[in-house]
Length: 112
Image (cartoon, rainbow, N blue to C red; front, top):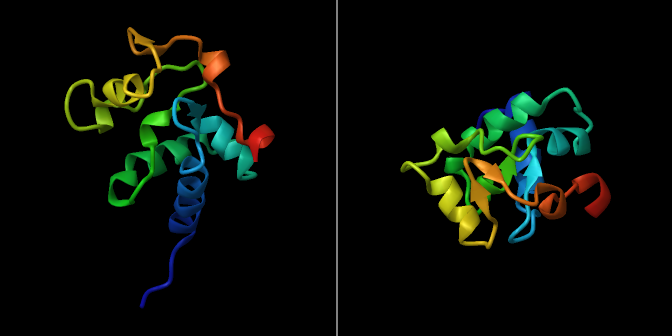
């Protein structure tokens, strides 16, 4: 059995937070990083979301950039899978931008 490195542990913590994002809500890479006490690690959260395909039940489609843009969409299979998953949850997306982002934003610092 090999030891987990620091990145694996951080990724696991990111996944645990992401799994708590409610259906029909979204958060940002930075909000997760801030919640985990690593405010300057938004990009690392993005890397975790990119690698989340190997994890069960991580709703990576609910994590977007700080402006509500689907910046991670190219990491999903298919052309518009990220958008389709969000739209299945009644999240409106126009030109890769979540509409009513402020209303749908889930802040783990306030919610957890």
